[in-house]
Structures are given as C-alpha cells and as structure tokens.
Image (cartoon, rainbow, N blue to C red; front, top):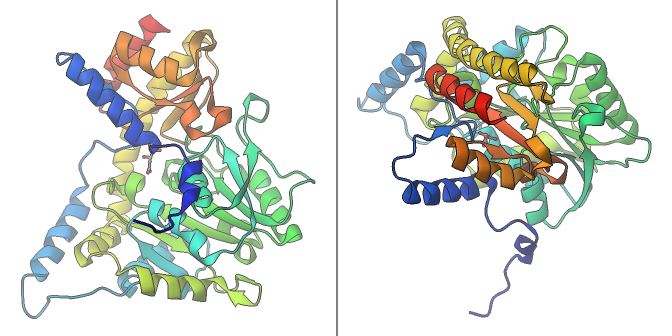
Length: 393
Ligand code: MLT
C-alpha cells in the first residue's frame, strides 16, 4: 500500500498498559500452570450485579422480544429516563443539571478518549501519574503535552502553578492510580485557575462513589463557577459493577463556550455521527442502579471492596511503607521496596508471591518506583494476598 497513516502512533507505547500486563501474566501462567495467581491488577470488579440491576436488565431484555415493546436504535444521547435518573443523582448533592447537558456513553473510557474530537490544538496538561487514556488519546491526535507532576511532595495531588498556560486540564479525583482525592479547597483552586486562564477542565469522576468523607467533592459541579469551565465524565463500572455491561455518562454544561462555539452542541454533533447509543436493556439497568434501592444495593458492594482496601492499608501501615489511596478509593499506591523499578517489582511479585498488580511506571514517568494494587478482589483472595505480601515486603 502507499497510503499515509497516523504516525503519531509512533509516539505512544507499543501496547496499552493492561494488554501488556495480560501478556506477561499469560506467559507466566503457561510456564507455571499450577501457580495460584491472585489478581490485583486491572481495576475490574468481581462481585455480581445487584438484584435491582439484574431485574431491570431481564425485564428490558424480555421487552425486546415482544412486538409491542420492542425498540430499535436508541437515542444517541440516551433515553430521557436515564438522563433524568442522572440529573436526579446529581440533585441529591444539590447540583442542578440541564437534561440536555447529559450524554450517556458505553463507559467513561470512550468519552475520555474521544473528547479530543471537538477540541482544537491546545496545550494539554495531564497529571503524571494518571490513567493512561488521556495521554495516549492526545498523543494520537498530535497534541503538545505538559505534565502536572504528582509525587510524595504533593501527596500526588498536583495544584495549579502561575507558569501554566491556557489549555485543557485533565483531573481525576479520586485519582487513578494513586487514590489521592482533591478536597473542596483544592478543587476550588483548580476551578478558579481554569476560569482565570480561560482553560477547560476535563474531570474524571469514575471513582466518586468510593468517597465516604464529607471533605471531598463527588463532582466538580459542587464547586461554584465550574459549569463555565468543566466537563465531567463518570462511569457505572466501579459504582455499579458495569465493567462488563458498559455504561457511563458525560456532562457538558450548556454554557460551555469557546472560540464562538458551544461545546455541548459540538459533542451532540460528534456523537450523532460516530455513536449509536447504549443498548436499551443496559440503559434500564443503569436507571435501576441510580434508583434509591439501586444506590443502596450497589453501596453494599462498594463497602465490601472498601473493607479490602482497609485490610490492605492496615498492612502498609504496619510495615511503615509509604502509600496513598485506600480511603476514598479502591486503589492503593505504594513505594516499591528497595527502590525497585515498577516493572521489576511487577515481575518479582508475580514470581515470588503469584500476585498481579500494576506497575506505577505504566501511569507515567512519575509512577516509576511505585506500584498499584486494587481492592476489587474477593475477601478471600485479598486476605491471601495480604498473607503473601506480609512475608515478602
Ligand atoms: C484500571 O484498572 O485502571 C481501570 O480499571 C481501567 C479502566 O477503567 O479502563
């Protein structure tokens, strides 16, 4: 062939972080078929969907098999019933949203990766370390990247600096991978900065349901003025166990305007062209997850995971190892022992303890020498991992 390809792909790592982990774990399993591997790597849930959600899924699926209730293409932006449920969910925290500012998606990852479609060539500011999707998608689009460095000095919570320019700022709170969470004061400083510099914040709140402490905002829209400078992207994956069902949402306030363009209108146009919506049964399941009963049932699973996080944190406290997360987040982020490099520790942990985690370096250069484990395993597997870590660390 003699076509041109997008050579920006030369500038991203050859495989996606979690694909690389899967590759290494499969190789190890082939070589050690009897190894009893405990997976604390990708943040994938292990508990089944709650009953309220399954009932809604089944009922909606049955409707699809009956002439009178069958539905074809769903609306690209989501049925009104689910958008209304999302508006109501925010309303519980006193946040008023326009129905038209809500867009249903097949998960936060897609919208976080696709939002670059409606943005021009801006300076991009990305936390380092952070969820790799923001970086990879901006590099694929040939954007210029700046980093907001997180480290032990700022407890992995980078704050705005005078030298930062107008641009697109990605924030993730509670953070993936560090679990560090902005409090009201800190997030207010980011919103004030964005307004002062005419910047846009893309706020990833996928882990907000794990916040059980009043000092931390669940949504950026709890901060005054944020509707003039922020898009929020959230997910049912961790909150309601939808990693396999796929559903999330994006809020683009109607007032967001730049360069004489309304971002909401542009995203509408983008979605209508490139997205055919979320399946009807999944939308009904999502609606059920946001009902009063659904929120309560899903919270039982969140508490289960947070108990794992508590047990894991206890181990690091006992060992005196520096870590963040584990309090308002399912992730625990800790310093590798003996100054080991992240991937070196990954191999070491897999080989010596048969535990899979995620190397910090996969989330950015400032993740080097750090490691992430999740609390999404079963209690049994978490306790087994703690026993093995107790001996190894
Ligand atoms: C993670 O482990 O970082 C997440 O599960 C990945 C994701 O949400 O796509």
